[in-house]
Image 1 (cartoon, rainbow, N blue to C red):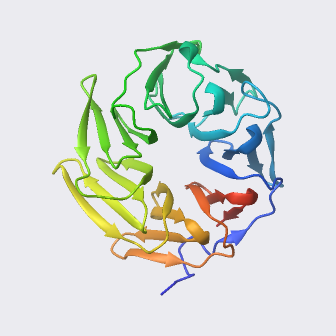
Image 2: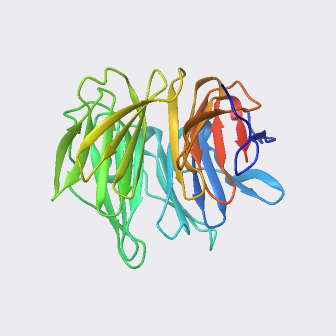
Length: 294
């Protein structure tokens, strides 16, 4: 049974400046930023959504698959096809292109950003490689050793929580980076594809097919499967106010609030939702340029 009443109000469809698929979204100090096909980088202000970066990184046509903000939310990283990798400073408006780092031109499928004093980035590609990137005081990147934590399977998602870094691959494996090494932490007998990760406060959520999430409680090293619906879950986000939000196929949105468990919310769209970000305004994006907010 659906429930359209939430503490944040109802989800509403927003006029989009594009009909291209939007693949990822994040929250910055200046508002949400979304990326997608054709090298799109969109931002939102009081008047609506608009192109933030007209061209790039690398070339205008490169699909951008992933986006993440720094800990202070002042800068945003995005990555995608042909090794495209870029950064945008929401305060200064400065765009920087770091595409094909270490000669890597495979599609970047996932990225995560951590660190406050030192900006640390991890990007993963379709060959299962994870490249660590560390920026100095001037914001100049240096690159660490490439690893293949999943033995070559595509890394579908990365998530950072303090000093911890997690990865999920397309073969149903979740890994944690500890003491400079990757360790497999699950998930036994999941038998579904994984699409996204969300890590916060020692708890990890993994989104998968068949409307199923998996919750990992790090102190107990225990996995708990949670059925939230029937549609594939593509995107996850955490919110201090909302608890957690999951979005997926057919315009589905599920929310977990303290002491109430997961419940499905009504939305005004039927397009597949591929990513969600929580902030002052919660935003979900998807196919055909779909944008919904609350």
